[in-house]
Image (cartoon, rainbow, N blue to C red):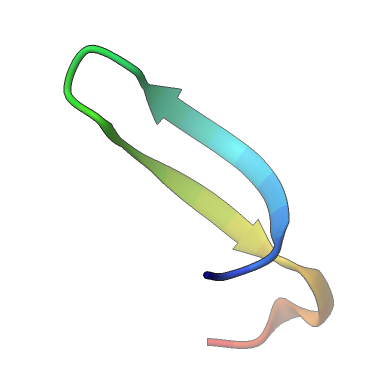
Length: 25
């Protein structure tokens, strides 16, 4: 699982976006 800062998470839909540490892909 990717690690970083959670930018957005939708618990109802069960998905979200993470801004990875270091700005990697």
